[in-house]
Image 1: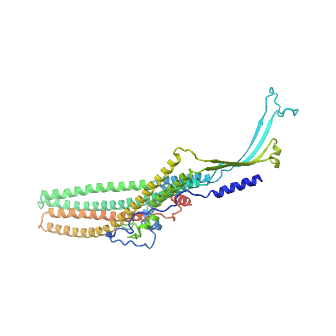
Image 2 (image 1 turned 120 degrees about the horizontal axis):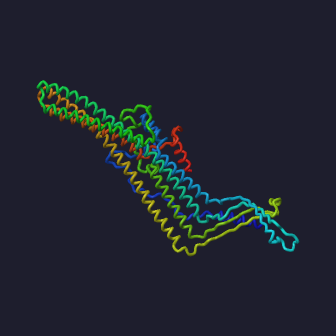
Image 3 (image 1 turned 90 degrees about the horizontal axis):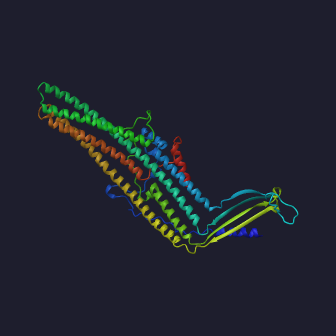
Length: 496
């Protein structure tokens, strides 16, 4: 009867453990505009699809770039380190979550104790016989100091640790997206520097032919020394540019190798022409509110916010009595053969209540600290949202202006080519000196360089916009990628 009463009391305490002292969570207002800047001509309407669902394997179409991304996701050391951080956070959550349940232990023991021969110890005085050895056997199963979570202290601490795990998972997802976009931007820079190198090499060949012709004319008295010096200086400039761009291409390759995390294979597919690295020319911007669900850094900030909210509940619960219980059931006997008989059965329940009376400001200080941390986390969340809005706005503005700039650069190069052709014909006809041709040739070369640079910046901006909108994460990851497969698995487990 006593055991039934104790069991009923324990059940009642467990039913009482449903109070939660944490404030009701509400997502803070982002304090951003309802649409992106209108001066770019961008219509911010709901997009036909979610950019976050467009994985990198769909967005990027260049076969060489796709292979480099696969290698990066399999070998990047920073990504592997971030993955370990998620596993660590998940382990800490499992440890904290275990506090919600009694830690059940089972054990057995035996005791053998005997007096020395000189002591003349009698185990039972008056029994008429001496006991040389005392034997005692015991088995037990139970738990100790299990806190009945009446006020939600343990549950809120567990909730906080869960949110920290989800925060780590979102940080991993953000690092994944950032790594892929950084690789793509570096790759486009590599393509741009290769085009600049090719332009310098073509210019060198043209200037070398001009220098040889001018040298021949000089030798026959048909050109002066000034013209020959001007042509020679142009040739030297072209050679200098070749060296500079060769260095730039090598530096880009080294940067790619660092991001990939291993040496670049020799059998990589050939690169696609500049401008054919992505699937679509324009990404739908959608609405600013979409960022709250798409951007992993915003999601990570919100998980931190939810965790801080839970810690306020844990701090409030510390003001109330703490109830814990120790219980065990087992057997004990002086004879091993009777250890598991009905007569050997033992049990015990030991409830304990601790009421905070004088904590000398500890509990109030913890509550004040938790509330202040909540305010800090709110401001960090709002700042993250505002930064995300700015990144998308900047990328959208750049997208529109790069379109205009690229069109003008194409027209500029066309007009510079015409001006150079006319100047060269006038020089050949003896109407103008070579100085006019020299100026126009320099201008044409500079304009062609600028056009390549603007095109590279435009295509890099597409990658930036893709990342800023929260794209770049996909669960359709090829199973041949060790690290990326682990990332998808760990993030999925953390979400549950």
